[in-house]
Length: 271
Image (tube, rainbow, N blue to C red):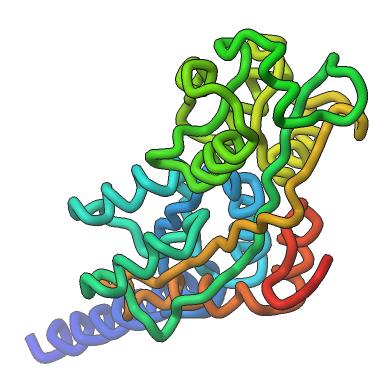
C-alpha cells in the first residue's frame, strides 16, 4: 500500500510538471507577455485605411490585437452614447470627442488631435481647375457630398457651398451620402459627376486600385480650411493596455509618417 501511494504521488508530480511546462510554452507562443489584450477602434470613415495600416504595424510589434470599425463620426459618437463597446474613438472633428469627455465617457488625459484632414472638390471631366460657383452648371443630383449631419467633411463642404453664393434650390438637390469614402467611390465609378472628397480617400483609392488616376486639373483642395481630427480613449478602456498602447503610439514618428503619407497634415506642422 505504501509503495502504491508513493508511485501515485510521483505520477501526480509528473502531471503537474507537465502542466507547468504547457502553461509556460503557451505564454512564450503568445509573444511572451501575459499582458496581451484586444481593443476596438472606432474611426471616422476617411481614416479607415490608415487605421488598418496602423493596426497591422502595432500587431506586428506588440502582442496586442485591434479591430477597426469605421463609420461617419456622428453615427459612431451616437453609438458610443448608446453603449457601443468601443475602446478608442478617432473622430473627424474635435467637437464630438470633447462632448464625450464632458459627459464622462472619455478620458481628457488621452485626448489629442492626431491628424489634420484636407477637403477637396473632385470634378472629372470639368474644364480646368474646379470652381465652386461653376458647379451650378451641373444637375445638383450629379453632385455628391458626405451628409453634413453626421460627417465633418460634409459639414465643411456644405459651408463652402453656402458661401459660394449658389442658389438654395440647387443646394437642396445635392446628393448626400454617409461618408467621404462613398463620395470618392461614386465619382470613381461614374455615378456622380463631381463631389467633395478627403485627400486621404483619393490616396487610399489609388493604393487599392479603386481610383486609377486623378488629374490635378480636375481637383481642388481647400487647404485654407483644415479639418482637425481628434481622438479619445473611452472611459471603459482606461485599463485596457491595448487601447492605451494605441493612443500612446499615435505621436511616435513611424505612426506619424503613416498618417502623413496618407494625405493628412500633422498637428503643429505645415506639410
